[in-house]
Image 1 (tube, rainbow, N blue to C red):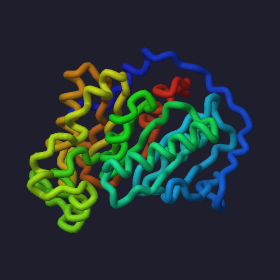
Image 2: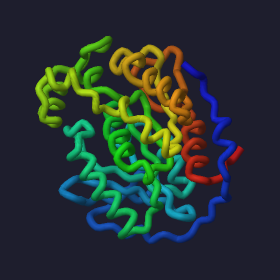
Image 3: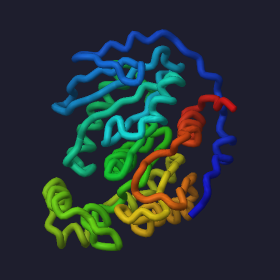
Amino acid sequence: MHSVQISFFASLVLLTPCVFADDCTFPGKTETWHDSVLHLFEIDGRDCKVVCPEKAAEGKPWIWRARFWGHEPQADVALVGKGFHVVYMDVGGLFGNTEAVAHWDSFYDYLTVDHGFAKKAALEGMSRGGLIIYNWAIKNPSKVSAIYADAPVLDIRSWPGGKGRGAGSGNDWRYCLEAYGMTEAQALADMNGPLNKLKILADADVPLLHVVGARDLVVPLPENTDILERRYREMGGKIEVISKPNGGHHPHSLKDPKPIVDFILVSSGIEVSP
């Protein structure tokens, strides 16, 4: 496992972020989220959330959170302070299947066409959220500025299947098979997961950052991030892995989210503060 390095981001062109007033008008109700305005509404039959910055950075950059809204939010909060919108669409129970990807397609179109959001989104997925961010990115590589994955599930056979080193989750495995319309035998033989489609992202030059616990027993690294890291490097893709030596599956993120925030900023063409 590689220690954190973000030197390759220095080769990107860094732009000083300009900001402009953003009325951030959405339907539905509003709440306060870490001193920012949170809009709650429905798109394509799914519950959605959008957090608005006080001032949006030039081009209206955004980070798209998958699953576990509000859990370890420090990176999201910091990015709002940098002028990013934070968005969420609940596709829970679909395990990143084609239906989930289609819902995300609808939300992407709504945000970029109706609200002028940047054409490229930064994706953020914790645990099972890894399935939807990678499956959506693989279908839409030109619409992704970067992927931040945190202890991500990358193979349903590993979790929730528990067919390798991890214990898995029996109930979730049954729901997952139903979501994919497969029998267990079909799922075990399936080779269409994210780990087998990484060349699409490498060819699109999508940078990846994974934050993992070296002792993760829920989503074992040898079945998930380790495979992705090795393959992506072999394909010439840009990837950094921050490994927490004594960490398990939880807690996610980092106490100091600066490495995550800097990765998202630089990948979005925004200058990083010292």
